Image 1 (cartoon, rainbow, N blue to C red):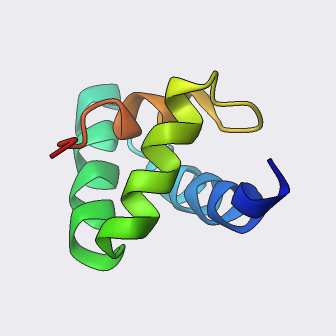
Image 2: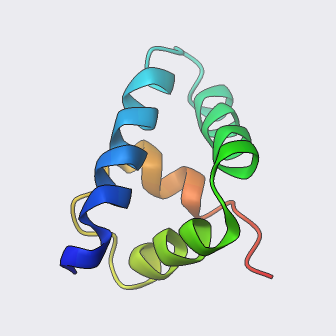
Length: 72
């Protein structure tokens, strides 16, 4: 999954920022909002596929956020 290495790093960096929010649901929501605003559709599609394949290398917060992204 080397093609996703950069996306994994970026998602983990974003999750590290939102992890400072003590409210887990708020942190997940903030990350979802960020991914929808700043990631292009093909990036979101690739990270969703990565999570569906097990999400190796992603933080728990990143996985939770990606699972809430629309798939269509």
